[in-house]
Length: 131
Image 1: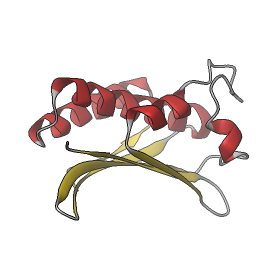
Image 2 (image 1 turned 120 degrees about the vertical axis):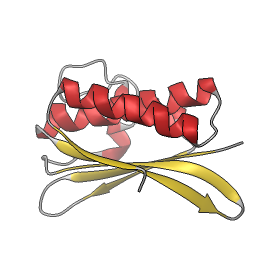
Image 3 (image 1 turned 180 degrees about the horizontal axis):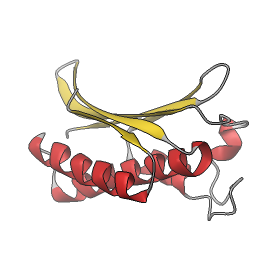
């Protein structure tokens, strides 16, 4: 684990975004890729705070099949995502936002998986591989 933190508010989100930028730079990602990773962290962490009130962000280094990358895990104990397919559509929001966070994070990363935790919460795992 490169980094792990609880998030409760916008200040915590900003801190994990800066940490994602630092970790992705240390891992060898280009500047544009660092911005993609940190933007995805921002969107996913903000969703956790907005929908669940708090959450946890973990950044892991990856080494798989001769490739290296970074993994973002955002978990919370909120109401969960009722319709994952709908949540990944542009402009769909249950919170009155623009509805671009989850679909945007998916576009910015190489992989994005959403798991619903029982009885409450969600776990989002996003990965970006070094080219």
